[in-house]
Image (cartoon, rainbow, N blue to C red):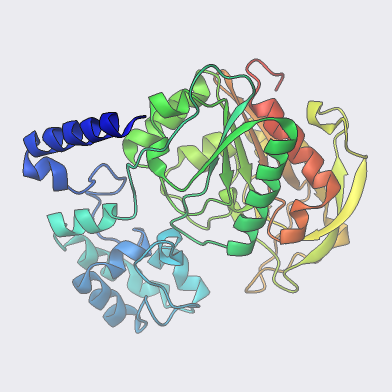
Length: 371
């Protein structure tokens, strides 16, 4: 673009913005889930912390300041663990008297939800657009999505990104990396064949973005979820864990946290071609509250529970018996793949895990591929 054309474009943009009402230019994003929800013991803890009156009620009722006295300090700026926890779910973890919750819930629900509350709740979302590839696609186009409002494990995210971008270069895929939820609109998603959620934690899409994502899958797009993308203790979008993933996170061992375990492969699965019947590796092993098989998933990897300890953070047992850790399913005309492997950075250089991810992404990005 010539300098003259660039100046003309900037002038036109300035004129358009000037003609726009001031309120429209500066209006905060308000298209977020739970914007109007009452304060409660089942609300995201971050929304309690954002309102001084709600935080005070919670502290007085429980004797614990939810921002300071839980198992870790919790802030209001994303990413924060407070966005994937509620007072109810924290009760057992921090030794809170659950008997105070009904009265606390009633007091919280009596608080007004003001416009300031709504703006604060929506501030962790965005509607920023991203640059997309131009022209006809000559190779699979993949969107690597990294917006995290909950727990961000930096080593996991960075190692996965490095491995996936190297994989894209090796395979000739066109990959765009973004932390912007605004990428989830029909026009942008229509430029991609699959999206990868890189250890996503916390609710990250607005209501409009959720609908665009669901439509993308139904019309033939692909989803690949890695490790933490199905590892939140609390979800505020039931469709995501119950329909897309098909299982809800229960926990992972802490005694010790990282262990070697035997991974068992279903060799009849279409993605098992480059995998042996079994292998051993060390990682943080997730358990789930329900078996994804019951929701129609086709399991490719399972854990042999006899090969590692399944003691949770507070002594809870994490046995599943049949213990899937990677599976696929069809969503409308689209495809999803999820793997719980991926907390330790070295898992992203493990040759078998790399082979599985490579084949899974290629499969997810191929319309009409067998589920």
